[in-house]
Length: 225
Image (cartoon, rainbow, N blue to C red; front, side, top):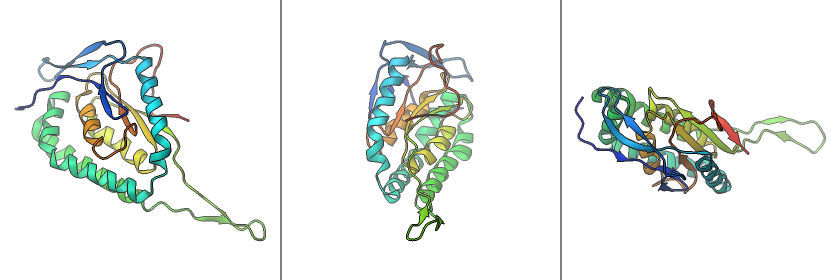
């Protein structure tokens, strides 16, 4: 596994900007293949979570009110950017997760790009079928609207690809996101947030790093409304 990238100090990505953890704490990030320290990541607290949720709530109305076509266009641009920067992202993921570089290039980058393009198309194909004619002069139908702020957790084994699997459908349907990568593999998800900020309004996609603390345990996907 040969890579040429350097990582260094990481920062949370909240409200369209890279920021330090509120208390300034950091955790070492290791390359699991070598045991080498490759970066220091923010050790986030409840204060950081609250800041990210506040940013996501603020962005929700604007993002959720965009047309499916507008949201689809943003996802397609993100897919194109990931494809264009595939070598850089693959090198980061190889360090981040201790994987063979070529395996990331061959197996993960194309799947991520395809997933985003799929949900960009799906965003424009959602239907609102008529549910019934129950009273004279009235028609009932199903209307699909964003749920709200979605809290997501990405695992350590496919950090970036599984993050994409989560954010694609959530963003396509007008939700905003606070995503927490596994504490051992935050590198690529934070880089993904920086790239996504080129195409998404600030606050739509927020990423915070750090180990889970007793005061706040996340499991699966949470919705804040």
